[in-house]
Amino acid sequence: QVQLVESGGGLVQPGGSLRLSCRASGSIIRINAMGWYRQVPGKERELVATVTSDGRTNYVDSVKGRFTISRDNAKNMVYLQMTSLKPEDTAVYYCNADLQRYTDYRTLNYWGQGTQVTVSS
Image (tube, rainbow, N blue to C red; front, side, top):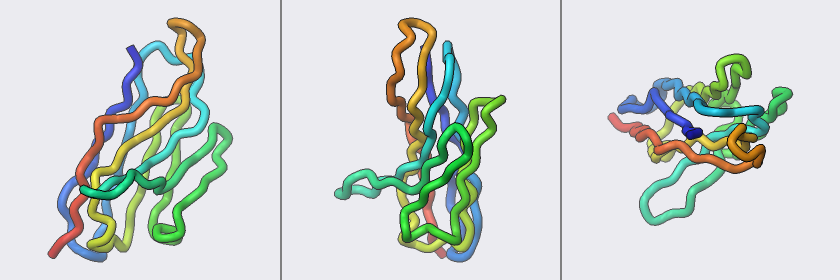
């Protein structure tokens, strides 16, 4: 059973910082790209940032210079360091990963359950 579990969300004031973490667990052979997405009620889920297995990153324009994605391949973890947070960053943040599993050697896309980030004074 493969799963992604996020942690680190919460309430923060504008201008503050938060660090999200996501751990992939289970019978995993290899993890390819990992990423963070976010969603607010009534809107589609949007890409925030991705990181490949060799460390190449990609960000949505609205978070460039404020958010940093990183990963620890030895621990099967991905992080999102968020700084200079704005009220418009408020959303449920989801971890995502493309990974190959031992059960059938298939490469599939997985989602975490989401963690709420609220930026408000």
